[in-house]
Length: 483
Ligand SMILES: C[S@@+](CC[C@H](N)C(=O)[O-])C[C@H]1O[C@@H](n2cnc3c(N)ncnc32)[C@H](O)[C@@H]1O
Image (cartoon, rainbow, N blue to C red; front, side):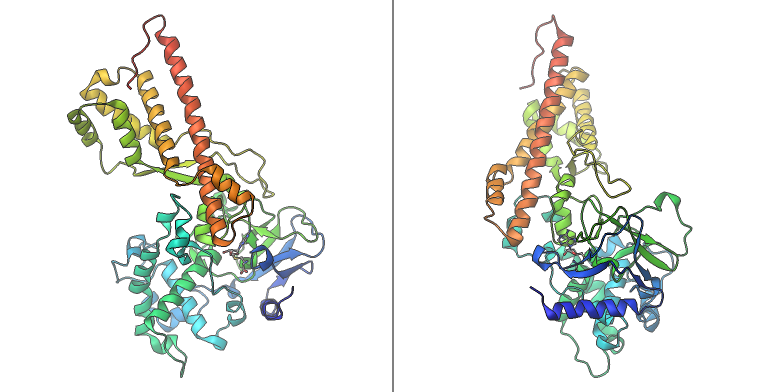
């Protein structure tokens, strides 16, 4: 069913966009209301379009960034940099530091707050009108809703407290100190709570919509010419790119945003048929990360699912497996260089890469165990062997113990999720869940499927290692097992 208010905002936005000098918009595409599929606005082909067609052109002047908004020139003292700062200001994100210019994130949040508060005076008003004021990203979920993610490793990455700290340190003070710049004459000032909510809203919008823009000053790096991933952690300038961000995305896609000197263009990577949605690419993200940053999940992104296993869990399994006296164990663990120790390890598949047409042809599968985990276990086992050589007499035993421990730790990791894969699958396939609960269930189920694949893979490797060790030790007595 059509929604006149929604459609009229889309139409005003399109008209505004086309009026920018240098903007183009292909006649065979249109902005559609895809809320029925839970996908907001999107761009759909209205007739067949061949490969390598320019769908639209966005002049750089239409992008919202530090280079185009008036804000940096109105409060230059805030935006001035010495050139020595960490462009990412990562260390400041906990809000512990209040000095220094705002980083990429804080700069764009300030600019978006400024442009929003200008209302009809902002050059980007029709664009701001089609940006969201509600989000499905994890930052906005209640504790109860987050509980549905169970033991997912995405939960500790949400970072709400860090964002609150950053806004209080780098955003609110600037708006308050320069209220005469941010608030047009006669407009009411926002309360601290309203300003925090607005900062969160702009932060979430930037997270899901902004692009990293290749810096004009830098020479083009031929290695990165085909860079489609929006790396929010990079040092490039961030900007809000009207129209390019109306594109929805998937792990297989059919369009690409090219960064030109004066404009950005969106071109088709393969023929698009009438009725097909034009899709961009946000990168090889698992559904957990997709949900955290963008607020949705897809079947195609499941191949990139990841989960993590903690070193503490592996360590407890190793301790149980090796049955060493406390002194030997304590000494060996103390041998590890705390600076070098990884706290968590990523479990993932070899998930393949999209080809130049945005399609993936390989099958995703677990093809190795995390090499940094194996290395860290080996370092510990080496330390143990130095103290107690009989505990780990040879390399074969080291490898067997390593695989036993990884296998067991993966089983215990899977058991940290209170429901089973089968239970989740039944609910999902019977369509008994919807909304956020369903998204959370897809994430946690995907992680369980991945963990089970990793368990099976470790088991296979363990059996091979054991049979190899058995053959090598024959006709001697069977090797003594550690437990
Ligand atoms: C860059 S915007 C794309 C335009 C957006 N649909 C809109 O209405 O403004 C990114 C947001 O679009 C939505 N989105 C993108 N791709 C999607 C997909 N394949 N399925 C569902 N939602 C999607 C998510 O809400 C995401 O945070």
